[in-house]
Image 1: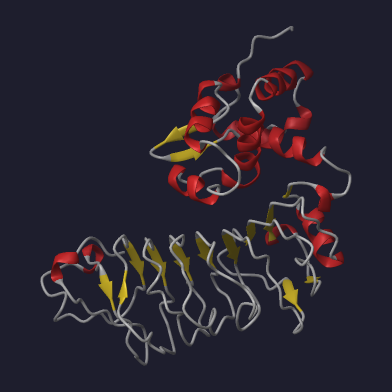
Image 2 (image 1 turned 135 degrees about the horizontal axis):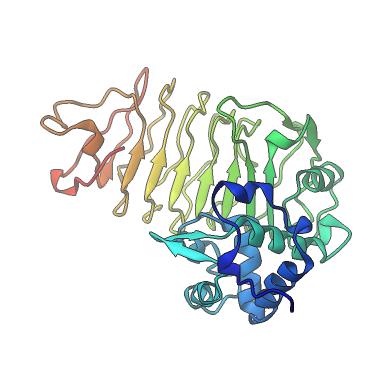
Length: 338
């Protein structure tokens, strides 16, 4: 073949940024492609999911996100990728080399000349075209849009109605200050019913669509949004592991999370002008991280504990002028607080 390069021998460290898959030597491309094609269909699908969406995600989170996607065993699939040096797992985090990510994205691009007929849409221009013109299809499983790479654009009111199988939607920025580039019309009223990952930084509406069902959500990340509320009523949220509403300064209430029994992380804004309290004490048996800093904590309750080490199993959110107050029902539920 001309070279004996293995995927594990790809350029590392800061030099990686200088390499692109489309500029690689033909022989190296061949090695990478042969390694991919030697996988089973299921492992190839897992490779594409990681390359396009799940690099640097936790193993446990990937398992939950793919729980009903037809994979027999995500864990065994990851072991197969690691054995071929197509991915690495360190400290429960899945890592994939930049060049391998580019290979995965290139494979997905070749699925169709029409981006709306690919399983993942990750190129910013393609995402904008599909959402502006409402030309997505049921083939689309995931969308990832870096808004730092685009200009102003308006999402069509029916953009997601044809994408009934969309499970992963990520609209994000790498900048500290959010540029308001993504816009919705007042008539926008639909998000796909199978969403498991909803990450939309700077979401411009006051609430999620009234007909949206959040019961499949594993992660809900709406940083710096214009949300005043998320949804009404009590939903079965047993899949939900993380809620991030950091920077959503217009928030007036949080939803009833009493049935989010597997919630592990809750991020709330550090300046809240609310709060309409839920009707009952929220019981989060697995909650390990709550972030509201800086916030007026009840120091009588936390006396003798550094704030950075304080957490609770049973929470009650109470009405305050600024921030939130946390009460413990049982001191034995202390774990950690960040």
